[in-house]
Image 1 (spheres, each protein chain N blue to C red):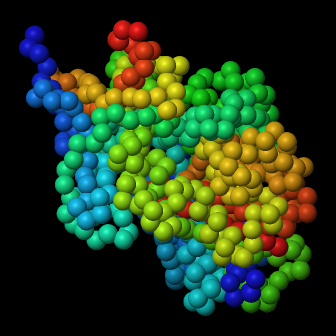
Image 2: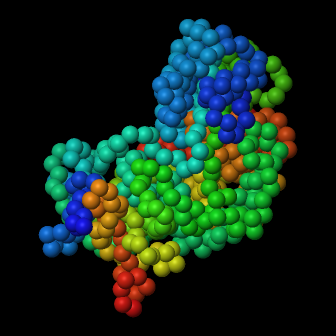
Image 3: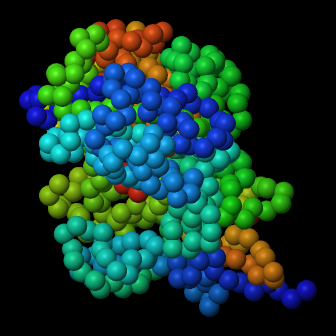
Length: 154
Length: 404
């Protein structure tokens, strides 16, 4: 069987790292006032005192600290494409210090809420969200940097 | 406060909350007829109809004001329909109030009703890759309880809240709702029962997360002058003294449904007024300021307990206590019936489930009955001032202050 084609599940929100560089979320930075946004803004700045319409695409910090976290014990409804059988996963809201914003995302497979704590450092990775018709659809996820993270040596 | 800033609540009416899947119009119509009867007025007396929309019931739901007006029978009354997610009912009230205070009409009918699908709320159908509400389900599997759980975990981490505290909120509200004829769930529960119900989004369990319900609620509002002319002299006249429909203030640094991220505070360092406050605390603050009173004047509150833990956030956000003190307020019984300031004497969303466009109106109905002293079986003693609080998706604040 041919290896699955890797396709971002959403266009332009992150780099996949397939070119050898570390993957990153793609946000915008307002040229006028420096406000960041994720997903990227192209038409307006959220700062009420800024009327700039110029934005540069920037890679956001790859590491951040957990602002809060939870899990999904029940299968979310469509348009989420759950694996069959369903496997619960964790989600985390992660604070990026440089951008001063909080970004949500799933946590990598195999982590439970018992492995997480507010303030823990996590790192962005690209992982498969779902597979369909020979394609792996990719999304960003957070991986704990602590010794408790599965798949890592203690 | 001066009469020219108040509107009178002449009638309040509700259809029982439940899960029947019948047309939403039926629930709204029943609530409207109850509110009209309560006001002692006829449908033909209504000069303005203000509808709170439902987005899961086709075109009639998007033009709810006209849908209800047609169901009651066309009379030529003026109409408006509004959608503001969970805050739709409050904005419908605000619209009717503005018409009355501007002198454009004397008396208005406000109606909201919903029929909801089973299970988790899913986004509206279709492949909609430009809609953050669709994308958060698709890319993260982030349901509404996901966000409620993030807040709950923050309380545990920052303030030492426990799973028992959250369960106690459910136990309290279940007790409050026992005698409420409009509540969907009227059954006492114990802390053990709550803590042995299935985990949905850690640390929140099934019995701590608000269900989705069918229901309808309606109000008849009028100018103070109309109310005096019409006064029956029975129950004390209840007035709406403030309605807050505020939006957030940039930078909003708390992650909110259905967003992927917060605002960035990077550009706001040191800017005047850029203190990192979340949106929720600003909602009731605006209502208090408008009415010229403070949280110390409040006899009771109806707040949006989408989860048990979220009710505790609201205690702080509506000023009943300082940050991190909500658990103590709960444990001390301050917010239970018989306490100093009962919260959700109706039983709250915990006993109702959420019927989105009807819910903020239902909160006001409960306050009206409490202030009249007619909330049989769940009456707050000597209630004089009531506040509601709620927050709708995409930046919709909702808080109504009432007094008698």
